[in-house]
Amino acid sequence: GNSVTQMEGPVTLSEEAFLTINCTYTATGYPSLFWYVQYPGEGLQLLLKATKADDKGSNKGFEATYRKETTSFHLEKGSVQVSDSAVYFCALSEITGKLIFGQGTTLQVKP
Amino acid sequence: DAGITQSPRHKVTETGTPVTLRCHQTENHRYMYWYRQDPGHGLRLIHYSYGVKDTDKGEVSDGYSVSRSKTEDFLLTLESATSSQTSVYFCAINSGRNNEQFFGPGTRLTVL
Image (tube, rainbow over all chains, first blue to last red; front, side, top):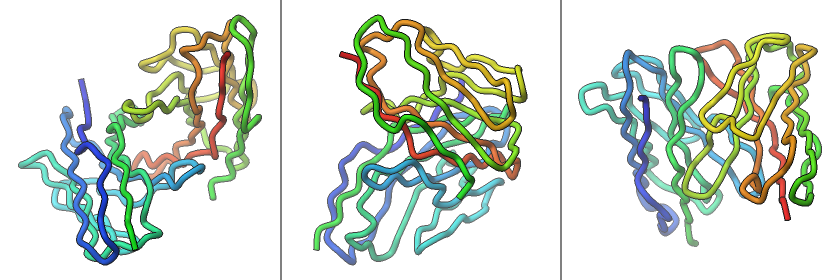
């Protein structure tokens, strides 16, 4: 079946450091791919998405490129801030519209 | 903001009692979902609905039932709560654009 695997956390960085959170997927067909972010005590917010191979999703300085050849959708940001501290989830959509989530990666950014 | 509310936001109950969680949306979306969030598991789909009175099971549906009698409301019921159902429950809607889902604020349920 379809699945999503994220790098284990927590990830701890200093402010202004470069961020990469790895995400790989297994899927039949060509799913849409998503990154969601969850700030403490809140629900999930859609951060960015990509709907086909080589698409780059971007939002709030975060980027991720849909790589079909490596079945990956890694999240990157050039310079993180303390306010980026959150849990990040990678997900894919099945043809039925259901989402399959990775286990989440906690990011902690220190001043 | 997709106009999704959940109630209650927090609940503590005892093993064996029935519990109903409510999800309400204001934008007439057809598809609605219930997930549970547990450490190390991400979000897992419990049940979903593709229209009024049309529902189907997700990957962790045992011990849960759902109902959708109106487009705007999707109810999740634990007929007899167990400690393993202690979790944070999220409702979501499908926007219809590339299967984007938008989530409610969540309900934290503790079963003692």
